[in-house]
Length: 239
Image (tube, rainbow, N blue to C red):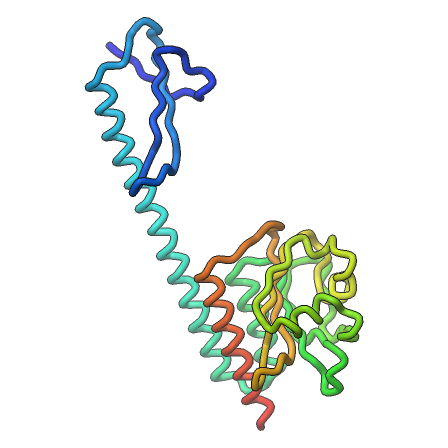
């Protein structure tokens, strides 16, 4: 009877076998083998069998990834549909933004979602909605002077989705950190809100993952959410 054990590469001896797990020409992993019997070499049939098993393993791993991607995309579409329905049915601006903040925080499972809007004087920015399970929740109604808030200035100037990693550690962002955030180590994602190409405020998401990045699908989702809410705010202000 022959016994084959999977083992770390550093334990491999002269009779060890190391094979990559590949899919469509790309290496996605590696598996190392070593025998209990130090004197028994690997046969061609055994190597071929291992390669066939690894080929099936790679296919199974890729299928699992595709299922996860489909599930994530389905969740994103559902979230966008729910946000769109809110924007169409809730006419009161304050109620709408509060509901949106709660929906985003809950569905995205993030630390905090807040929405800040520019006051009529265009010099002050006020937190109009906030949703977080954190005990260090910022107060709705808190405001900052836009000229003193470097992070908000960046959002208003660039007028595009931005990601700020470890933003709480940045000295220039402390006005925002102390006033609008939970002051927790996290990644900040900001979505500008615009009316007729003019930034009027933004949605911001605090994610517990400090080195969080966003992919193309998430970027498209956030941009569509931002556009929906911007349009809803404009409509609410017309009545």
